[in-house]
Image (cartoon, helix red, strand yellow):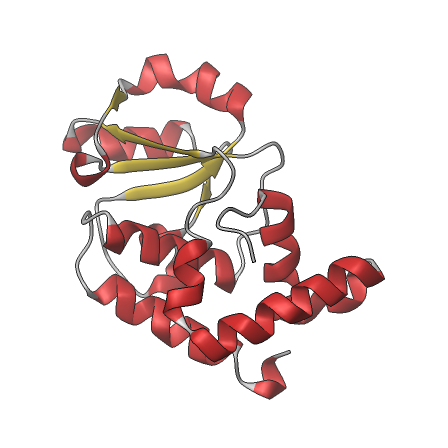
Length: 173
């Protein structure tokens, strides 16, 4: 397995875990099945490599009182994930979301986003060419990323572990 996965391949893996393997091509299904087997065998160590997907993650800081404005004005442009997704079970001011590059260009000037080192970020935007339907694997990997860079506490890793246990139950696939 390579160290970096494309967003499209990751989305296929997430779909496979969510019971959508029949929607994939035979090759994509075979690859997803092998990746799923490795993830279920190796756990968070294997998931950690999927926290880095081809050139997509940007870290920003915005004044804390502006985060609600960012969510309000960008609601249609953002697909929330990680610690901000309801599946995480967390309450956090961190905004973690997928966004199309054109929407980031459109909204960024209004949002007052400042590029920030990962550990100082309170906004993580994952630029993608197609907004994914955020599934459990997306949330688990993005929780782990937020925990690894230190912007959320260990509850994020616990949430990622919980989701992975759910995904790896044989009846779930």
